[in-house]
Every structure is written in C-alpha cells, then in structure tokens.
Length: 295
Length: 315
Image 1 (cartoon, helix red, strand yellow):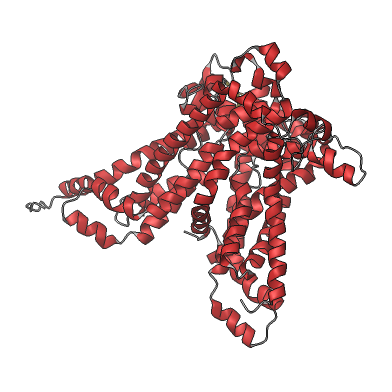
Image 2: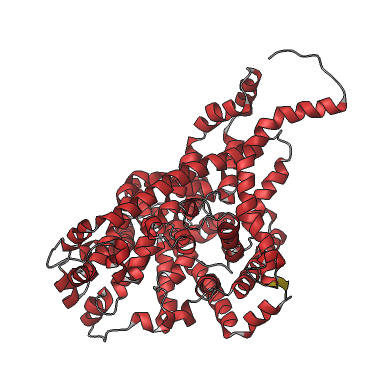
C-alpha cells in the first residue's frame, strides 16, 4: 500500500505493542503468581511482579510429582500416538480421493464432507464409545473419539495432493512398476511435507490441549491427562492433596500453599507450548494461510 | 511391466480395473471405518431422542415415545435460555471477532518492518493455541474473589469495591465476550492478513497515482477484495451458530451453578443433562435440536450466498 509517514509507523507499532501486551500479560500474571510467596498472595492477591519471590509451590509439586509426571506421560503418549495415527489416516484417505482416476472419488469426498454438515450429537457419540466399543477408562478413549480424523483436514490434504503432486510423476512411477503404496509412501508423502507439517501441528495442539475426552470418558485417576488434571485442580484445589494423588493427607493440606501451587500447576501445563511456540509459530502462520485459501 | 494378452470380456475388464484400484481402495478403509463409527453410527443414534431409554432393554429394544422428550425439553425454561444464550453469544462473537481481526489485519499490513510484523502475528495468535483449561486459570487469576488481580490490584487503584465475579451472572456476557476476542481475534487476523497480502499491488499503485487517500484505499480496494474470505469465514461461523466452544462456557466460568443463566449454552446443557443428571432422553433431544437446526443453517446460509454470488459459496 502507499506511503505511511515515519510517525504513522511509530503509531502503528505503539498500537500493536499494546495489543501484544494484552495478549501476553495474563501469562505473565500466571508465571509471577506461581513464584510469589503464599502469604504475599493472600495479603495482596496475584500480581504481575512478585514482591516476595518464593519457589515453595514448585517445591511442593516436586514432593508430590508422581501424579503430575504420570499425567504428563499420558498427555505425551496421547499426543504422539494420536498425531501420527491421524496424519496417516488423513493422508491415506485424502490421497485416493485426490486422484482423478479413482472410482467413487466423488462419493467418498461427499462421505467426508457430510460429516462436517451434520452430526449425531454428544449422547449417541458417548453411547457408541462406552456401550458398543467399551473404551471407557482406557487410554484409547483419549485418542480415538472425535479427535482422530477431522473431515476438514482430509479435504485440505486432498486439495494439496490434487494441486501440488504432479500427475506425470505418479504415472511414470506406476509404469516403472511401483505399487500404489510404494508411490504413496516414497513419492507422495515426501512431496507433501508442508501440508503434513501443518495438519500435524494442529493435531499436536488438539491432542495436547484436549480435556473433553477425559472429562466424559475417564474416571480412573491413573489415566488423567495433564489438561484434565489441571481442570480438576482448578475446580477443586483439594483434589491436589486428595488420596488419589497419594501422600499424607492432613499434613499435606495444612502445608499446601494453595494459591501459588494452583498457578504453578498451570505454568507446568502451559510451558511446553510457550517454549516450543517460537520454533513452530511460522509454520502455524503458514498453516492458517493454507487453510484460508478455498479448496 | 509384464505384457499380457488383452482379454476383452466385460467381466475381466472390470476385474482388471478392480485389481488396478484395489490398493487405493485399501488406503481409504481405515478412514472410512473411523468416520462410520465416529460420525455415521452416532447419526443413527438420534433415535435415542424418540425413545424412553431403558438400559436393560438396550437402545433398539427401548419403547418409542415419539416427541415426548422434545415436549419435556421445550416445556422447561432451560430450552429458551440455552437457545437465546447460544445464538446471542455467537452473533456477538462473530461480529466482534471479525471486526477486530479485520481492523488488526489492515493495520498489520501497513507495518513496514517485516520482523516486527511477524512478531505481532505470532503473539496475537498465541492465545488461540492455549487450552481452555489454562484460559480458565488465566481468568481465575484475574477475577478470583479473594486473590484476583482485578479485586486486589486494579479496582483498589480506582478506589472501587471488590466484585464477586464468580457469583454474579450479569458480568459474564462481557467477560466471555472479552475472552472470546482475546482468544480468537488473532486467529482470524492471520487469515484475513493472508488474504490482504494476496491482493495485487498494482491496485494500490494505481490508486495512489490517482490520489486516493489511505481510507479510500482501505474501503475501495482492501475490503472489497477480501470480502470473499470474510463471507466464507462468516458462513462457516453462521453454520455453527448453534454450537459453542464447550470449554469457554464450562471451564472459564468454573462450572459455577450460580452463573448458568448467562453461561449455559446448548453444549453445556447437553453435557450436564447427560453426565450430571443422567437424563439421556432430554440430552439427546437437545442434541438433535442442535444438529438439525445447525444443518438447516449451513444449507440455508450457503443457499443465500449462492444466490447472491456463486463464487463466494462454500459448496
């Protein structure tokens, strides 16, 4: 666009620094509250800059680290397995329907598309996974329902395959005697890294942030994912020191620096994203841009 | 490839075609089965809404009761409240999120320093990638009655009284709207920015030569040219106007019972009816109501846009 004056530029930067601050300050509040002395919080509340720094909350969490570490493990496992499985399923479905010569390709595309228009709702979904498939209180309940395959991503991948994989490459590989699976894994997948990275990143976020599946399908505390553990603690701080978490109850509750521990837990939950985000952000921005272009 | 004699009967031709595409068909199988179980099987489950579910008899064996579940649902005051809340919140969210995002995208596009522009994009996108559980914590740290930043630091600064945020439903429409914009505007901003960046520079050069002001350029070039993206995003949002971000309405108000008049939406109602009350019939009636109206809204809004401009329609 045309010229903006130097002062105009400064004004724009000032505006966006304000917006950025609004986006970031709540995180600062969280982190600094977690390292504030408990008495100080009780006296003057959570604050942006701790006046009395104390790592007591983290010490406390270290002492009772078993449940936290387990839920971390669950979340990591669910995220890794879920993301790999869904990338594989999404691309395996999207590739054939991207091929112009594939029989039933329109029917199969509609089969995917319709799932984006209409759904049976929570109750039948709950019923299918608990009564028919009996996934309740298994780790699969965190991986399979709802999250594993999103129709929108299938259509996104289909568009990418159809527009970015040159048909002559596929044909010549076929003539050279390569089977469809070999073509898919050796040629199509390596050429599709941008879309796979995009969808993969979104799936990582979906799985890592999910607590809904745990909320409806899991009652066994051994299977609590990190986000669900956080959810429990936010709604009920006593949960942290309840018998399910282990430890000597009465003593623990008395010694519990409630408010700072709560915030320390949240920091532990959000740190993986805050730390890895700078490395991933350009892919996110690119991925959103891909999604914005009509397929 | 080994050359073979060509057999010309129809059935063997079909066999050859079948063998040729068998591997591709096999690729589709896992996804096909998954969608069947996760999406299509539950669609049949809408019959639950028309049954008096008795677990001893199973779903198929339970007695049909016609529209009784729907009658019960719509006789309660809940039906009106959750419908009103769901629609009003979504309308406000769409309008505010989109205007904030479009404004931010236009301004962001004006920033010359590429590094800073990337930086701002990343920062405003960050809240979108945080789980609603964490957002619940953030809001709690701001609004907690005893220890929150608002009550302990900000309000005293202006000499104002402490406010019992988590027991007064009147504040929540504003709080939830703020949270929604905080969480979502960055996401839409990046999408709209991508559309703006895609606009041909010659339009602006020509306009500048003709002496068009910045405002004229924004209203006469930028906005009309990103309208297709705005329309598509709005269509998707309108199609989902009967659905809500469950986490936002359940997690962020900490599932507080005192707030339900302004925080209960169809999604949270269905969840509570299913898992807290165990009222399978009512929960699925509400679910069917949601799915059906949602479906009609998607088709309807798409139809209208098709009538106005075919290129802007979703399908």
